[in-house]
Image 1 (cartoon, protein in one colour):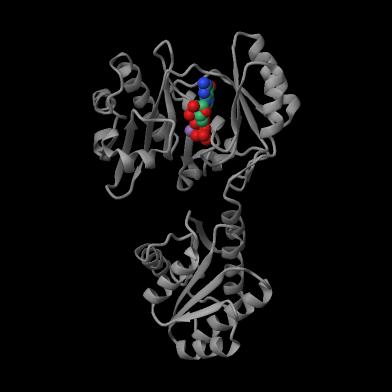
Image 2: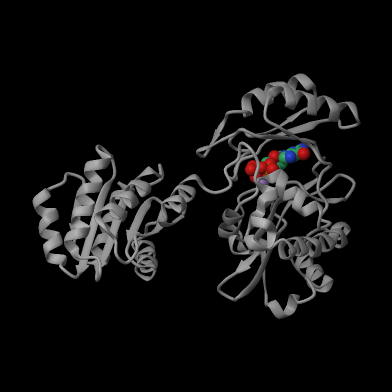
Length: 391
Ligand code: GDP
Ligand code: MN
């Protein structure tokens, strides 16, 4: 479960990570005006009006704006409330006393599944897309992998100091930055997060180090230890991705990813392999969906409908190896699904193998559906789906 920024800052704050003074959580222009009035009236020279949505790049999308007067805050509030940022509607706005920025850095801690440990990333180049910095100037991004053994009592200060020093943060702030990193690691660990990211981490004009933004992902597997994360559920912000929530309600194994090729298969292993083949073909999967072992026509129809609902999906790869699920059932499911869905712009590439695959392919061929193509192998199917997604 992802937190929105103000929640991430609350989580940081209670673990000792320096954050800006607490702001106001607002759902109406009136509340934004009241928050700005209060903050400007009690010493803040400016406030920052920030959209609270579970996606990055809010600044670029017009969702983060500074105001030096109540009227300006009102104007920004009117513009930001209701704004659509990458498919997320802004229902909640955070108004916070603005900070003076001398420099912007990047700092994060996340699970490192490959190394079965943790990964700290630190860069002097912050406030921008860190993946872009990593592509253009990899030396500017320090990546330090940590084994669980190294952090049994938290992140040692010496390790934190080495990381921020290697990232070339200025001498004046090394102490404060190392201290903050130790606390960030505490927050990451104590709260069972899989990601705790600060972008930007700022140096103020008077050399303080503060988390100006917060991106936190809580580990769903640890929800039982935190009362189901009830404390973070708030009005106006979906706890889960809406499609994942729908899938969960319908008992469909679905994980939203960030590519354009919808992927649907039977069996978690096969679906994972399909994601790899899509990547090898130069594409990016939009999701993981496992229709399960005994996929009925009904389950197939429900699953396809869900995948096609994602606006990012440009083509769909249906990869079924018939075992318990027989080929003709899959074929009938695809036909039933397209019938139920009516017109949809995306093309499906279906690869059928295993039990009664030939029968299934024959049924699909006879149905001659305009947006369904058949492919003989997984590689061919993936290549075709990727080509269609990029067309
Ligand atoms: P994001 O675009 O979703 O990552 O939102 P951020 O919270 O990172 O804000 C985007 C940018 O707005 C930051 O990199 C800053 O440059 C700027 N910004 C945010 N808050 C403040 C603030 O309090 N003071 C100043 N001067 N700029 C801010
Ligand atoms: Mn940011």
